[in-house]
Length: 323
Image (tube, rainbow, N blue to C red; front, side, top):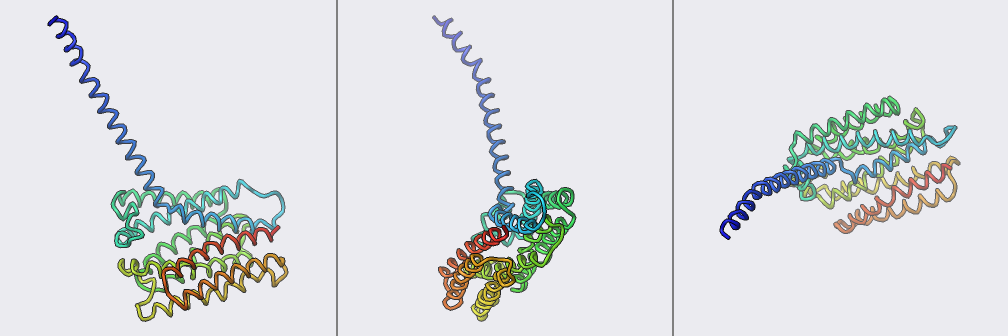
């Protein structure tokens, strides 16, 4: 009986090290897979996918309108290459921006959880990723789309990172400068489709350029304390903040509405386009005027929502009218 029990104990003890080793290997594999998933997730966050959606929409609109008067079938493969290359450049730009501003992002509530701000992702990884994405996107655009599209992409990246980003800590003029690279995706799409930049392309650029002022003023007012805490001077000092927000919100809107009506004035757009753009423009102007008259986060939030709705509607009307 004792011999049988000893044999059982011996067999049990002989298997324990193997089971423990297997569990240890499985635990290491799980931990490694978790780290890889976490790193990939952080890298994806760095590319600012929510911003890239708007960039893709803008680039598509520019491409579609740029091809509207071109002969032949719609070049879907060229569109795909244009979107892919532009989004690579945009992702690289967004990543490098977060690398440059990581210490300041850590001081703002709305950006404090970004991977580089928290230190969850090493800064060197963010730098390498940003450079790789931007370089790959620029090369891809030059090789598969056109040199003009690639040059416009590089201009967008350099003006955003080298001028707009450092200027945010120095002067509210940064809003004016930042609106230039913000409107460039429309030109990239147009240049990719047509090979040149026409008057209509610059009209689309102007619409995007002006749209950004009330859009950003809503954000700047909602997070003014955050920006001040991190040392960003996107708004003037307290005594001039209200007047600055008023001018930078209402004046661009007053120019934006007639600018969107230009195609109708010159006979290249129908009545539906004119009425549609006038309607959404009036709503946009209304919410901008309300914020100008009464400053509150609630009114700023409504203006932000109006700006988000306005742009896709105008794009849809432009595309529908181009047919």
